[in-house]
Image (cartoon, rainbow, N blue to C red; front, top):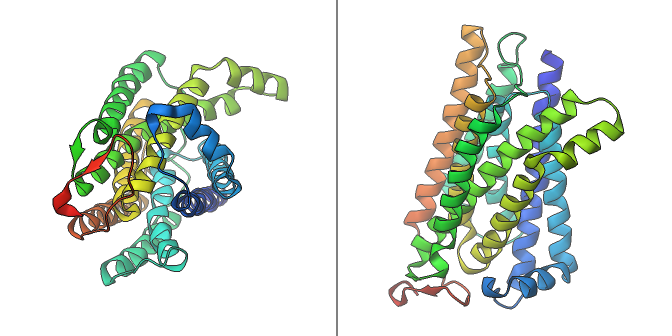
Length: 313
């Protein structure tokens, strides 16, 4: 079981790395594209699919999601999600190395704190009380997921419908996409139960295709992805990425742990390590969000339906 937990942390790190490297690659590709207009979704999709650089980033993000599905079949949300959240630190490093954005002292210490969080998670791996849950009430899942998705859509699309300051737009995009990705993560967790509950390739495929979680995952991920592309193109990644990650991580940890009846480690020592890791990761993510919000950024790209406040240009 302990070896399994170590393997789970390693796979979660691979998922976070692949997903966030793909995110940076998409950001680079979007910088060379014309402004995206979500009023013409087919044209937006065609533009994205016709760009090899964007497709490479998207493929890496899909690999990250696949690794996330696998790791959630044998590890609890409370162990996996803080590791996935550490991807924010990776985004900051890659932003500095690839996008040539400056990494300040606060960001540097946040990266170090995220590394400490992962070490604490590895030390918290134990046998009892920390198993992954695979069963959820469809009714309760609907009660939690449907309103969350609707709120995410309304908040995430709000900058497209009104004049919005750059910072406000970035925060709205981040909260909206975070909620949508959080609901998608719940659907991924639901699909992971199918991998455990079915044996044989045919039964697994049939179970996945017939599951409503697959279509919840597809719908929320598609909506979040489109909003995220506009957000990355029109706002600072240092605002959108941390806020989205904070929102999605907190939502998924709270909702997922409750819906799937998971428990924290039974050992007081390991419980303390696990909670400390979660607190450190959460504190770092909030710090990064506040730091990004307090720093002025460059004017966003012109996006149809989104008009920045002239005072912030």
